[in-house]
Length: 104
Length: 341
Image (cartoon, rainbow over all chains, first blue to last red; front, top):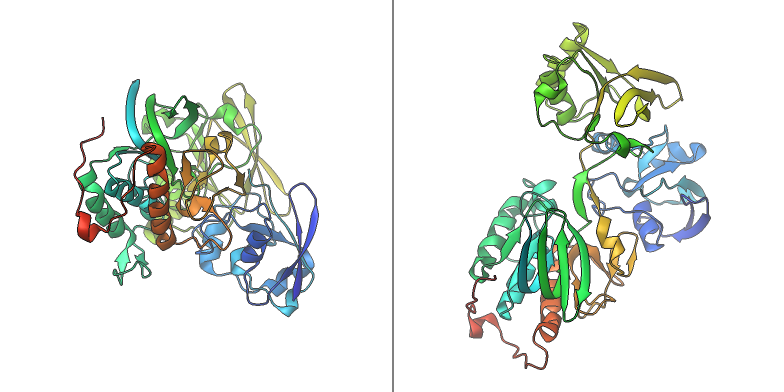
């Protein structure tokens, strides 16, 4: 199992166990994190936007052009913004910290 | 407009599951009114991916989303549903035996039962989360252009990187005093020809591309915008004097008023009892993407089944004390239904 750490919009830090091969979005939803993930991972919205902690960002993999296009519709972007339905959990991500933007 | 309608079941949401709920209710001889915020039926199928093929609809090996909606409409037509588009249900309250719902445009419906098939919520503009943006909406901040002339000789900031941003930058370049296009990166997700035209106008000085910036703040007095503050990812700030902001970040869904009706909602979905789709409020059911229970699959397929579960459960609320004769469509055929009032 791989540990993922979410920082909720209110600052609360939650560590969850994730199964390798799942997407970070799936893990977040399973653990009732405050995240809409409206399209269910079909890369049709930007409501699973997370801000990955700097040191982990390079480990999250390539960003596709489709993901970039959707990030255009997200707000409050940073250098390490990702749509977490596009990040696959693996051993490499054990301990990764991500901040969830407000759901508004 | 202040209409009052009375029906057996009011369905909130005219996406695939809302439409199929009409069918399931109709088979049990219950009349339906359907309300949707979008100007067309189909929900996400129409608004987000009309031309995408679906492969997991039983007996339809490859069907695009638009065609799916067309076929559902044909399937429910015998039940004569009344469909109210372009309006969001804002209020829902129980008065005696009826749920009363009303929309912002003055539609009122009383129904014995309610089926909420609202997907991820009502579609509206995807608004940038700027503290005071609402203060300027309708006067200086816009999510669509109604009259091009309104922008004559005005200084306009256009935010966004899609077709709407590019198309309006081109269209308004003729009438505006100055156009700034704010986008977070150099690439626009729009038709390459129009992007090229916009870049040519930028070189000619008619448009100024402000890249790579994001909206950071709005300043002004009352409803009048004065300055749009933009920032790069590294925090470099630029202040742009402008009369209008056109914000084009596509559509977003919001539960909005549904949050206020006393339903058991967590992270944008309504908790239901999976065998009936009953919510915590008697006579209100939730189906499709908005309904949640353990191991829920957000599939159109599951939504169809939920519509059947909800309709059968709602029958007992609509027709208290009456027997429900379970019938297959092969034996009952299509019941005939009087048009709802």
